[in-house]
Amino acid sequence: MRMRRMYTLSLFAAATSLALTLSGCGGGDADSAGSTATTGAAAPSQSAAASMTDAMFAAMMVPHHEEGMEITKLGAEKATTPEVKEIAQRSMTSQQADLPKLQAIAGSGGMAPQPMQPPLARFGDQEMTELRSLSGEEFDLKWLDVLSSHHMAAIMMTDIAMSASAGGEAKALQQKIRDEQLKDVEEMNTLRDQLRK
Image 1 (cartoon, rainbow, N blue to C red):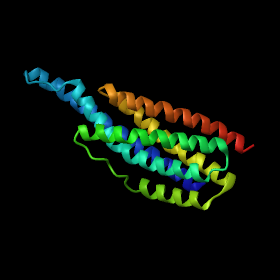
Image 2 (cartoon, rainbow, N blue to C red; image 1 turned 90 degrees about the horizontal axis):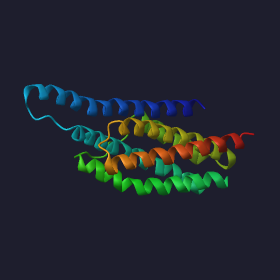
Image 3 (cartoon, rainbow, N blue to C red; image 1 turned 180 degrees about the horizontal axis):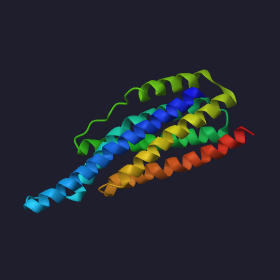
Image 4 (cartoon, rainbow, N blue to C red; image 1 turned 90 degrees about the vertical axis):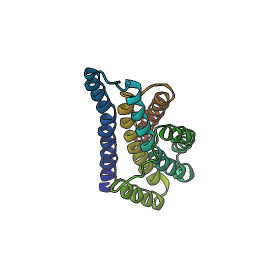
C-alpha cells in the first residue's frame, strides 16, 4: 500500500513537472511576442509557441504510453475479471495506435522522446515487479490501482498541453487521450468498488 501511494505521488510529481515545463513553453514565447512587438521586430506567432508545447507533450507522452502498454499487456494476460481484461486490451490497443502519432508530433518539433527519470522509473519497475508476483483478484485490484494512477497523470498532462496547443492533429490527439483515459478511470473506479464488496 505504501509503495502504491509513493508511485502515485511520483506520477503526479512527473505530471506537475510537465505542467511547469509546458507552461514555460507557451508562456515564455507569449511574453517574448509581447516584448518584441514593442521594438518592431517580428514576433513569434502564438501558433509557433503552442507547437513547441505540442512537441514537448508528445516527447514526454511517448515513454508514458510505452509504460502504459507494458501495464495493460500484463493486465490482458493475467487479469481474472473479464471487465479488467477488457479495459486492459482496449487501453493497450489505443495506446499502440497513439504511439506513432506522438512520435511524429515530437519529431516535427525537433524533439526526441524524453526517457523516464528516477524516482518515477524506479517506482514503475517496482510496481511491475509486484504486479507480476500477484494473481487472481489480488492482481486485479492492484492492477486497477496502478493503471488508474498512470492514467490520471496522463489526464493532468493533457489538460496542461491542451491549454496551449496549436490545435489541429496534436490537440485532437491530446483530447482523444484525455477522453479515453478518463473513461477508463471511471470504469476502473466502479470495478474496484465492485471487487472490494
